[in-house]
Length: 122
Image (cartoon, rainbow, N blue to C red; front, side, top):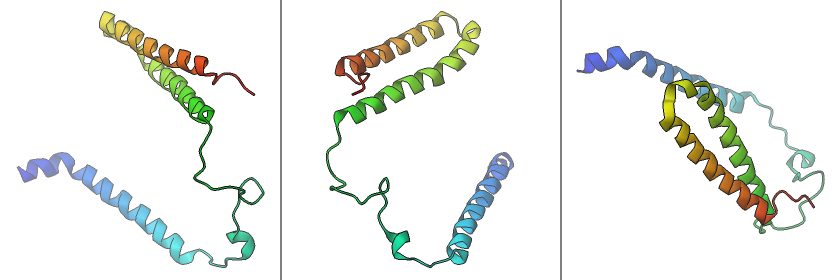
């Protein structure tokens, strides 16, 4: 049983170990060889060219989250529509109606965004 497992998965295991070794090696090599000359300019806080003026744990405006949801809606829609359109001839009516349900759910999310005012730029 072990021989069958190794026959099927040995190349994958070798690839994983080589990838881990190379990535850990690069991190260690960078840590060893990188210059370590900190100065006040390099260690200063950077936030759009000026010092931070408030606590980093402040509340964000809800519009920030609405824009993120809007991006996810359109990103998911495009990511799933292209493969669906390519294979539409092979998936039949069930695939068609499944995508229509998916698009309906995304449309509900888009209407929610619209009603909350995420599309209004102030």
